[in-house]
Length: 353
Image 1 (cartoon, rainbow, N blue to C red):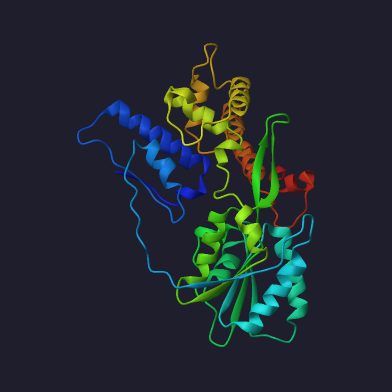
Image 2 (image 1 turned 180 degrees about the vertical axis):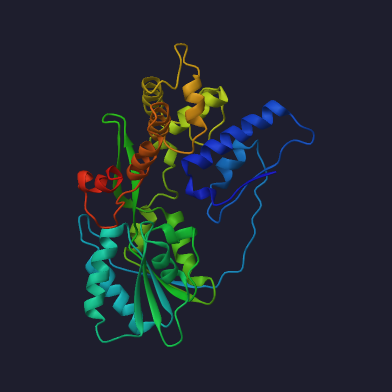
């Protein structure tokens, strides 16, 4: 049996893995056939059932405490969200007990809200402000996740890393700004950029559910109920807006084209063609378009094809250690944790003996 959990996130890896799993099941034709179980609290059940050959949809009502939804005024285009978030946090601290989990789109918003609340809560040592995002070191992340000590309350300022991946003890209040920052690949420029957009209703449900894990909770949504009805039911699958170079490499390794597989959402033709063109320039494909020996070696490295090519070429030139350092530098947004964006300064530590 192959189990896919939290499939509503629709990551590129999950969609690719499901397509390859279904293809493998058709090719192997085992008796009994391979079982596939796709799970999530907010799932596109009917579409998935059709993809899986009209598979049964099983619903399990887990134990969940009620969450009181409190709607805000209508959000305005271009409005700065930080003042509204700060006001909502102060209101929640005055009206409710327990710790507070705040969903914000990114690190910049977290930093600004943190600074504003630190001033507003000056003289209240019982309220602990804890940022939570992927760039924090392990100690800071643990400080945000661990339950508040007796006599204190936490206000955790988080990105959507806290939507499904983590459980924060003691939270019974959620404040949702209703925004998320998502990567989008632009085939015209060949670059991936981050865009801030409204979340889906499924994501809003996931976020509100964090307030009802241990006891009845409250969710403050900083948008109106009428706006909520206009949100998309589910978020856009990553496969429809991501760089497909890694997917194209894995399909070449599998020996299939996208049209030979069953997808919930097929990869866009333009983005896939550009990904194949990149693989050709990197030497991952031979003249006939099949995977080359270099491409096979690239596919065995769990990283983007560009980085895999860098590592292999560095090794071949006798510069393996330097290639690893450069790959690590490219893989980090800020390797010096606040050292700035000057790549020359960032490169100094790896150029010294």
